[in-house]
Amino acid sequence: AAAAASASAANQILEVPHDAAMARTRARPLPAGRISIPAASAFAAAALATSVLLLRPADPRRRETSGFVPALIAAGTAVVYAAVYTPMKRVSAWNTPVGAIVGAMPPLIGHVAAAGMAGVPAGEALAERSAWVLPALVALWQIPHF
Image 1 (cartoon, rainbow, N blue to C red):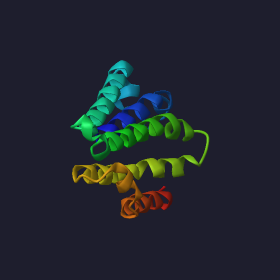
Image 2 (cartoon, helix red, strand yellow):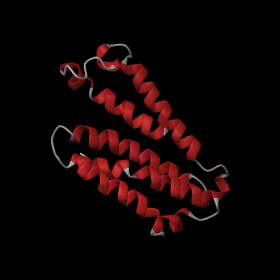
Image 3 (cartoon, helix red, strand yellow):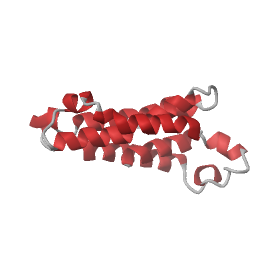
Image 4 (cartoon, helix red, strand yellow):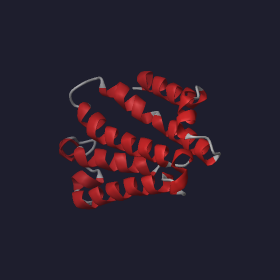
């Protein structure tokens, strides 16, 4: 959830000029000036750091069976959302599949994290077909949803 909050905050920061120009969105906190861009940026950075810290390995000697991979996937997902999906919304309809993939990552992160807590190495967890069922359903659902 913290990685999603970070990505959402980054999205809101990048959208300020566009949100300020539209009647439907100009009252949002950033375009309306109720929250400053530096404060929103600090929140986005803190949320992403919190996400990584919460998912990181509790025991660095057990990297392959703890949260290093889920933390990496969560951070990567947040960065792709902010750096690829958000700017892409204005230039291409391909933003929808990108957003669908990004939106489907939380169940995968949870699967890999839970497997790691049970002592299953991340590579094995990612190789399991069951790891991809819910993310695939979420991604496929998002296309007709939008």
